[in-house]
Length: 123
Image 1 (cartoon, rainbow, N blue to C red):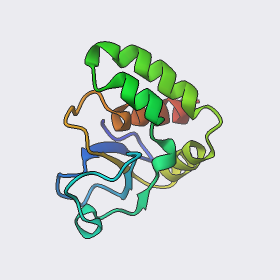
Image 2: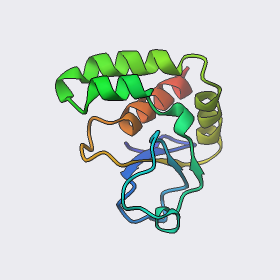
Image 3: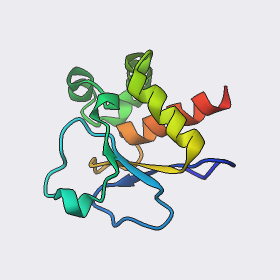
Image 4: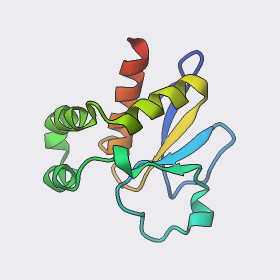
């Protein structure tokens, strides 16, 4: 996702190396990614409270044909989530990179969350 003036929200697989443009690195998976040590992850924060519920994640199953409905349900789950509101404030202050472990780089919770953050910042 391209940076927006004043802030940037990026997404990246946790298995990819960190970079100088990452800003604050935040893992948004509910469960810890396989094969990654905490040192290698280079996290600033693990915010599992903004990850999709286990029920939603299981229902979605990374099936791209369910993406639109996943977005709708996930956004509904985030309504009133104080941790999501805190992420909005972090983006207003600095760049962040939302980290995820999914293989699908286009259909995952970090991509969805980045879109929701960008939408919120436009309000």
